[in-house]
Length: 140
Image 1 (cartoon, rainbow, N blue to C red):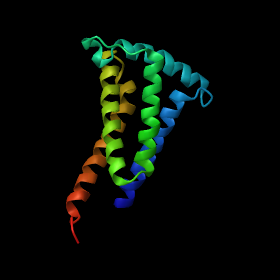
Image 2: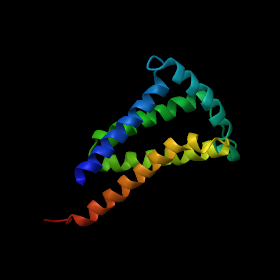
Image 3: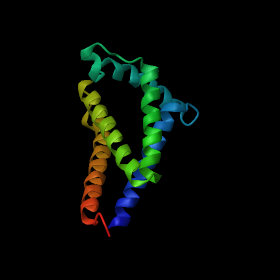
Image 4: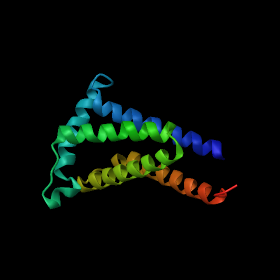
């Protein structure tokens, strides 16, 4: 069972690494990059901190989210356990923000599905990690 969770963690980390890279590097998929750029204009309009007077510039917002996904995805897939847990937390926040944004834009359930599935897998990995932490003795 541990091998299954390791595989899920690595695949999910690589998925985030790829989705972040697509946000940063136009050459990977020019069409998808342009689509992301236009979506982030809409995402900036419903940014959660907008209520407090902060609205990010869309290109900057796209780049920051891309870098967070690249770094956190890499650490989730291949980092030491502590950094895996931190990256899991950071990616969980990103996915909650993504779901909030899509719901605020009144997008279809199908548009929310990828973020929801990723969030579910991140939470599953988090629960699994906590169970493993309790099962192992602190001192041997």
